[in-house]
Length: 367
Image 1 (cartoon, helix red, strand yellow):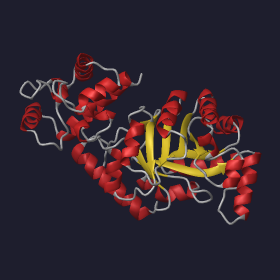
Image 2: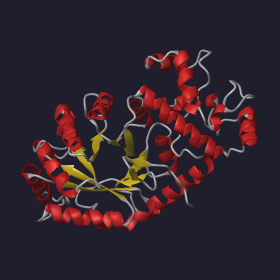
Image 3: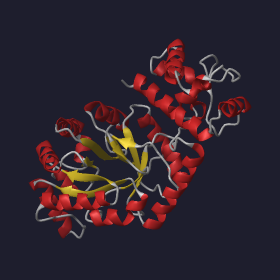
Image 4: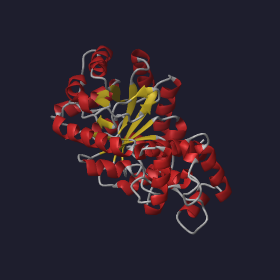
Protein backbone atom coordinates (compact mmCIF):
# COMPACT_ATOMS: atom_id res chain seq x y z
CA UNK A 1 0.00 0.00 0.00
CA UNK A 2 1.42 3.35 -1.08
CA UNK A 3 1.05 5.50 2.04
CA UNK A 4 2.36 9.02 2.47
CA UNK A 5 3.26 9.66 6.10
CA UNK A 6 4.60 13.16 5.30
CA UNK A 7 7.44 12.31 7.65
CA UNK A 8 10.71 14.24 7.60
CA UNK A 9 13.70 14.64 9.89
CA UNK A 10 15.31 17.88 8.81
CA UNK A 11 14.96 17.64 5.05
CA UNK A 12 15.36 13.85 5.02
CA UNK A 13 12.17 12.00 4.01
CA UNK A 14 11.42 8.91 6.12
CA UNK A 15 9.33 6.24 4.44
CA UNK A 16 7.68 4.72 7.53
CA UNK A 17 7.61 5.65 11.25
CA UNK A 18 9.49 2.52 12.32
CA UNK A 19 13.17 2.35 13.23
CA UNK A 20 15.60 -0.33 14.24
CA UNK A 21 17.47 0.71 17.39
CA UNK A 22 21.14 -0.03 17.89
CA UNK A 23 22.42 -3.16 19.61
CA UNK A 24 26.16 -3.08 20.25
CA UNK A 25 28.04 -5.49 18.04
CA UNK A 26 24.89 -6.52 16.17
CA UNK A 27 23.23 -3.71 14.22
CA UNK A 28 25.51 -3.04 11.28
CA UNK A 29 24.66 -2.11 7.71
CA UNK A 30 23.95 -5.72 6.71
CA UNK A 31 21.46 -6.10 9.59
CA UNK A 32 19.58 -2.98 8.47
CA UNK A 33 19.71 -3.99 4.81
CA UNK A 34 17.92 -7.25 5.59
CA UNK A 35 14.90 -5.47 7.11
CA UNK A 36 15.06 -2.28 5.04
CA UNK A 37 11.70 -2.83 3.34
CA UNK A 38 9.83 -2.27 6.58
CA UNK A 39 11.72 0.54 8.35
CA UNK A 40 12.43 4.22 7.85
CA UNK A 41 15.46 4.70 10.11
CA UNK A 42 18.30 2.29 10.71
CA UNK A 43 20.41 3.00 13.80
CA UNK A 44 23.76 1.23 13.51
CA UNK A 45 26.19 0.86 16.36
CA UNK A 46 26.96 1.67 19.05
CA UNK A 47 30.45 2.59 17.92
CA UNK A 48 33.20 3.62 20.31
CA UNK A 49 35.05 6.44 18.55
CA UNK A 50 37.92 7.61 20.75
CA UNK A 51 40.61 6.08 22.93
CA UNK A 52 38.70 5.95 26.28
CA UNK A 53 35.53 4.49 24.76
CA UNK A 54 37.43 2.06 22.52
CA UNK A 55 39.30 0.84 25.60
CA UNK A 56 35.94 0.39 27.34
CA UNK A 57 34.57 -1.50 24.34
CA UNK A 58 37.55 -3.86 24.45
CA UNK A 59 36.93 -4.55 28.14
CA UNK A 60 33.28 -5.32 27.37
CA UNK A 61 34.32 -7.54 24.46
CA UNK A 62 36.70 -9.46 26.74
CA UNK A 63 33.80 -9.93 29.16
CA UNK A 64 31.80 -11.64 26.43
CA UNK A 65 29.66 -8.77 25.08
CA UNK A 66 29.50 -8.18 21.36
CA UNK A 67 31.11 -4.89 20.36
CA UNK A 68 32.11 -3.13 17.15
CA UNK A 69 35.90 -2.77 17.07
CA UNK A 70 36.81 -2.02 13.43
CA UNK A 71 40.44 -1.52 12.48
CA UNK A 72 39.63 1.58 10.45
CA UNK A 73 36.62 3.25 12.00
CA UNK A 74 35.87 5.86 9.33
CA UNK A 75 36.25 3.52 6.36
CA UNK A 76 34.11 0.92 8.08
CA UNK A 77 31.41 3.47 8.87
CA UNK A 78 31.34 4.69 5.28
CA UNK A 79 30.75 1.13 4.11
CA UNK A 80 28.03 0.54 6.70
CA UNK A 81 26.25 3.78 5.82
CA UNK A 82 26.28 2.84 2.13
CA UNK A 83 24.56 -0.47 2.92
CA UNK A 84 21.83 1.33 4.90
CA UNK A 85 21.25 3.95 2.21
CA UNK A 86 21.08 1.29 -0.51
CA UNK A 87 17.97 -0.05 1.21
CA UNK A 88 16.23 3.33 1.08
CA UNK A 89 16.64 3.78 4.82
CA UNK A 90 17.90 6.93 6.57
CA UNK A 91 21.17 6.03 8.35
CA UNK A 92 21.70 6.92 12.01
CA UNK A 93 25.01 6.18 13.71
CA UNK A 94 24.97 5.64 17.47
CA UNK A 95 28.28 6.95 18.80
CA UNK A 96 30.00 6.54 22.15
CA UNK A 97 32.34 9.41 22.84
CA UNK A 98 34.32 10.76 25.78
CA UNK A 99 34.55 14.30 24.38
CA UNK A 100 32.76 16.54 21.92
CA UNK A 101 35.75 16.75 19.59
CA UNK A 102 35.52 13.05 18.83
CA UNK A 103 31.94 13.42 17.65
CA UNK A 104 32.75 16.43 15.50
CA UNK A 105 35.70 14.62 13.91
CA UNK A 106 33.45 11.76 12.79
CA UNK A 107 30.81 14.19 11.50
CA UNK A 108 33.39 16.02 9.39
CA UNK A 109 34.43 12.73 7.80
CA UNK A 110 30.95 11.39 7.07
CA UNK A 111 29.05 14.59 6.26
CA UNK A 112 25.42 15.61 6.41
CA UNK A 113 23.70 12.57 4.85
CA UNK A 114 23.89 10.80 8.23
CA UNK A 115 22.12 11.44 11.54
CA UNK A 116 24.49 11.31 14.51
CA UNK A 117 23.10 9.75 17.68
CA UNK A 118 24.87 10.53 20.94
CA UNK A 119 24.79 7.43 23.14
CA UNK A 120 23.66 8.60 26.57
CA UNK A 121 22.05 5.21 27.10
CA UNK A 122 24.73 2.57 27.72
CA UNK A 123 24.78 1.49 31.38
CA UNK A 124 27.90 -0.71 31.26
CA UNK A 125 30.39 0.46 33.91
CA UNK A 126 33.48 0.58 31.63
CA UNK A 127 31.60 2.89 29.24
CA UNK A 128 30.32 5.08 32.08
CA UNK A 129 33.86 5.28 33.46
CA UNK A 130 34.92 6.48 30.00
CA UNK A 131 32.53 9.46 30.44
CA UNK A 132 30.04 8.08 27.93
CA UNK A 133 26.61 6.44 28.05
CA UNK A 134 24.64 7.10 31.24
CA UNK A 135 27.47 9.29 32.52
CA UNK A 136 26.00 11.98 30.26
CA UNK A 137 22.57 11.73 31.89
CA UNK A 138 24.13 12.50 35.25
CA UNK A 139 26.11 15.34 33.68
CA UNK A 140 23.59 17.04 31.36
CA UNK A 141 25.78 20.10 30.84
CA UNK A 142 28.33 17.86 29.08
CA UNK A 143 25.60 16.19 27.02
CA UNK A 144 24.26 19.57 25.93
CA UNK A 145 27.78 20.66 24.95
CA UNK A 146 28.04 17.54 22.76
CA UNK A 147 24.75 18.43 21.03
CA UNK A 148 25.84 22.02 20.46
CA UNK A 149 29.20 20.96 19.03
CA UNK A 150 27.52 18.69 16.48
CA UNK A 151 24.97 21.36 15.56
CA UNK A 152 27.79 23.83 14.94
CA UNK A 153 29.22 21.19 12.61
CA UNK A 154 25.93 21.43 10.66
CA UNK A 155 24.51 17.93 11.12
CA UNK A 156 21.31 16.34 12.43
CA UNK A 157 21.59 15.11 16.00
CA UNK A 158 19.77 12.40 17.91
CA UNK A 159 20.21 11.69 21.62
CA UNK A 160 19.48 8.20 22.97
CA UNK A 161 18.51 8.19 26.64
CA UNK A 162 17.17 5.71 29.16
CA UNK A 163 14.09 6.95 30.99
CA UNK A 164 14.34 7.47 34.72
CA UNK A 165 18.13 7.88 34.93
CA UNK A 166 18.52 11.66 34.65
CA UNK A 167 17.38 13.84 37.56
CA UNK A 168 14.47 15.18 35.47
CA UNK A 169 13.83 13.73 32.03
CA UNK A 170 11.18 16.33 31.20
CA UNK A 171 13.54 19.21 31.89
CA UNK A 172 16.37 17.40 30.10
CA UNK A 173 14.23 16.96 26.99
CA UNK A 174 13.43 20.69 27.00
CA UNK A 175 17.11 21.60 27.36
CA UNK A 176 18.13 19.22 24.58
CA UNK A 177 15.56 20.79 22.25
CA UNK A 178 16.75 24.26 23.19
CA UNK A 179 20.36 23.24 22.50
CA UNK A 180 19.43 22.09 18.99
CA UNK A 181 18.87 18.33 19.27
CA UNK A 182 16.68 17.12 16.41
CA UNK A 183 15.65 13.76 17.87
CA UNK A 184 15.09 12.37 21.35
CA UNK A 185 15.28 8.57 21.25
CA UNK A 186 13.81 7.30 24.54
CA UNK A 187 14.19 3.82 25.97
CA UNK A 188 11.04 3.85 28.10
CA UNK A 189 11.96 0.70 30.06
CA UNK A 190 9.35 0.42 32.84
CA UNK A 191 7.59 3.65 31.89
CA UNK A 192 4.41 3.99 29.87
CA UNK A 193 2.68 6.43 27.54
CA UNK A 194 1.86 8.87 30.35
CA UNK A 195 5.59 9.44 30.80
CA UNK A 196 5.94 10.06 27.08
CA UNK A 197 3.12 12.61 27.13
CA UNK A 198 4.96 14.69 29.76
CA UNK A 199 7.94 14.97 27.43
CA UNK A 200 5.81 15.76 24.39
CA UNK A 201 4.10 18.59 26.27
CA UNK A 202 7.50 20.19 26.92
CA UNK A 203 8.77 20.72 23.38
CA UNK A 204 8.20 19.88 19.71
CA UNK A 205 11.37 17.74 19.51
CA UNK A 206 11.07 14.65 17.28
CA UNK A 207 10.48 11.67 19.58
CA UNK A 208 11.33 8.02 18.93
CA UNK A 209 9.81 5.69 21.54
CA UNK A 210 11.71 2.48 22.28
CA UNK A 211 11.38 -0.71 24.30
CA UNK A 212 8.81 -3.49 23.94
CA UNK A 213 6.76 -1.78 21.22
CA UNK A 214 6.19 -4.87 19.10
CA UNK A 215 2.46 -4.74 18.35
CA UNK A 216 0.29 -2.23 16.50
CA UNK A 217 -1.73 -1.65 19.67
CA UNK A 218 1.39 -0.62 21.61
CA UNK A 219 2.65 1.47 18.70
CA UNK A 220 -0.68 3.29 18.43
CA UNK A 221 -0.61 3.99 22.16
CA UNK A 222 2.82 5.61 21.83
CA UNK A 223 1.82 7.53 18.70
CA UNK A 224 -1.31 8.90 20.36
CA UNK A 225 0.71 10.20 23.32
CA UNK A 226 3.49 11.98 21.48
CA UNK A 227 5.80 9.62 19.60
CA UNK A 228 6.75 10.49 16.03
CA UNK A 229 8.34 7.08 15.51
CA UNK A 230 8.84 3.81 17.33
CA UNK A 231 11.99 1.71 17.39
CA UNK A 232 12.64 -1.97 17.95
CA UNK A 233 15.84 -3.72 18.99
CA UNK A 234 15.78 -7.37 20.10
CA UNK A 235 12.52 -8.12 18.30
CA UNK A 236 13.40 -6.30 15.09
CA UNK A 237 12.83 -9.41 12.99
CA UNK A 238 11.27 -9.25 9.54
CA UNK A 239 7.98 -10.81 10.65
CA UNK A 240 7.40 -8.32 13.49
CA UNK A 241 8.51 -5.31 11.45
CA UNK A 242 6.44 -6.33 8.44
CA UNK A 243 3.26 -6.72 10.49
CA UNK A 244 3.79 -3.39 12.24
CA UNK A 245 4.47 -1.58 8.97
CA UNK A 246 1.40 -3.11 7.33
CA UNK A 247 -0.94 -2.22 10.21
CA UNK A 248 0.38 1.33 10.51
CA UNK A 249 -0.01 1.85 6.76
CA UNK A 250 -3.56 0.49 6.80
CA UNK A 251 -4.52 2.77 9.69
CA UNK A 252 -2.98 5.79 7.95
CA UNK A 253 -4.76 4.96 4.69
CA UNK A 254 -8.09 4.96 6.54
CA UNK A 255 -7.54 7.79 9.02
CA UNK A 256 -4.74 10.02 7.74
CA UNK A 257 -2.52 11.57 10.47
CA UNK A 258 -0.78 8.35 11.57
CA UNK A 259 0.20 9.56 15.06
CA UNK A 260 -2.81 11.70 15.84
CA UNK A 261 -3.12 12.38 19.59
CA UNK A 262 -6.06 11.53 21.75
CA UNK A 263 -8.36 14.49 22.33
CA UNK A 264 -7.34 16.77 25.19
CA UNK A 265 -10.43 15.90 27.21
CA UNK A 266 -9.42 12.23 26.97
CA UNK A 267 -5.83 12.69 28.08
CA UNK A 268 -4.28 13.90 24.83
CA UNK A 269 -0.99 15.75 24.59
CA UNK A 270 -0.45 19.34 23.48
CA UNK A 271 -0.90 18.46 19.78
CA UNK A 272 -4.58 17.75 20.51
CA UNK A 273 -5.35 21.46 20.67
CA UNK A 274 -6.10 20.99 16.96
CA UNK A 275 -9.30 19.17 17.98
CA UNK A 276 -10.46 21.47 20.77
CA UNK A 277 -13.72 23.43 20.83
CA UNK A 278 -13.90 27.14 21.46
CA UNK A 279 -12.81 27.87 25.06
CA UNK A 280 -16.29 28.69 26.33
CA UNK A 281 -16.99 25.99 28.93
CA UNK A 282 -15.17 24.35 31.86
CA UNK A 283 -12.98 21.59 30.43
CA UNK A 284 -9.27 20.61 30.28
CA UNK A 285 -8.69 23.25 27.58
CA UNK A 286 -8.82 26.23 29.94
CA UNK A 287 -6.13 25.06 32.40
CA UNK A 288 -4.00 23.93 29.46
CA UNK A 289 -4.16 27.38 27.88
CA UNK A 290 -3.32 28.90 31.24
CA UNK A 291 -0.29 26.60 31.57
CA UNK A 292 1.09 27.95 28.28
CA UNK A 293 0.01 31.53 29.08
CA UNK A 294 -2.43 31.67 26.16
CA UNK A 295 -5.66 33.61 26.65
CA UNK A 296 -8.93 32.20 25.26
CA UNK A 297 -9.06 35.05 22.75
CA UNK A 298 -5.49 34.30 21.61
CA UNK A 299 -6.39 30.64 21.17
CA UNK A 300 -9.35 31.50 18.94
CA UNK A 301 -7.11 33.78 16.85
CA UNK A 302 -4.41 31.09 16.61
CA UNK A 303 -6.94 28.52 15.43
CA UNK A 304 -8.53 30.71 12.80
CA UNK A 305 -5.14 31.82 11.52
CA UNK A 306 -4.09 28.16 11.26
CA UNK A 307 -7.08 27.21 9.10
CA UNK A 308 -7.14 30.36 6.95
CA UNK A 309 -7.36 29.50 3.27
CA UNK A 310 -8.01 25.79 3.93
CA UNK A 311 -11.20 23.69 3.82
CA UNK A 312 -11.25 23.73 7.62
CA UNK A 313 -12.53 27.32 7.48
CA UNK A 314 -15.85 25.85 6.36
CA UNK A 315 -18.53 24.43 8.63
CA UNK A 316 -21.30 26.95 9.23
CA UNK A 317 -23.51 24.12 10.50
CA UNK A 318 -20.98 22.72 12.96
CA UNK A 319 -21.13 23.47 16.69
CA UNK A 320 -18.85 26.53 16.47
CA UNK A 321 -19.26 27.49 12.82
CA UNK A 322 -15.95 26.07 11.56
CA UNK A 323 -14.24 22.69 11.19
CA UNK A 324 -11.33 24.33 13.04
CA UNK A 325 -13.12 23.39 16.27
CA UNK A 326 -14.22 19.89 15.31
CA UNK A 327 -13.00 16.68 16.92
CA UNK A 328 -11.18 13.57 15.68
CA UNK A 329 -12.62 11.54 12.87
CA UNK A 330 -13.08 8.58 15.26
CA UNK A 331 -15.46 10.59 17.49
CA UNK A 332 -19.05 10.36 16.20
CA UNK A 333 -20.42 13.73 15.03
CA UNK A 334 -23.16 14.09 12.43
CA UNK A 335 -22.54 17.83 11.97
CA UNK A 336 -18.85 17.37 11.20
CA UNK A 337 -19.51 14.42 8.91
CA UNK A 338 -22.25 16.25 7.02
CA UNK A 339 -19.91 19.20 6.48
CA UNK A 340 -17.13 16.90 5.24
CA UNK A 341 -19.52 15.23 2.78
CA UNK A 342 -20.73 18.60 1.54
CA UNK A 343 -17.13 19.75 1.04
CA UNK A 344 -16.13 16.47 -0.60
CA UNK A 345 -13.43 15.82 2.02
CA UNK A 346 -12.40 12.31 3.01
CA UNK A 347 -11.91 11.76 6.71
CA UNK A 348 -8.24 10.95 6.11
CA UNK A 349 -7.77 14.31 4.34
CA UNK A 350 -9.59 16.06 7.18
CA UNK A 351 -7.19 14.50 9.69
CA UNK A 352 -4.16 15.45 7.62
CA UNK A 353 -5.42 19.03 7.61
CA UNK A 354 -5.80 18.83 11.39
CA UNK A 355 -2.19 17.69 11.56
CA UNK A 356 -1.20 20.88 9.71
CA UNK A 357 -3.20 22.92 12.22
CA UNK A 358 -1.41 21.18 15.09
CA UNK A 359 2.00 21.97 13.59
CA UNK A 360 1.08 25.63 13.22
CA UNK A 361 -0.18 25.84 16.80
CA UNK A 362 2.98 24.20 18.16
CA UNK A 363 5.13 26.72 16.28
CA UNK A 364 3.27 29.46 18.13
CA UNK A 365 3.55 27.72 21.50
CA UNK A 366 7.20 26.66 21.09
CA UNK A 367 8.80 29.41 18.97
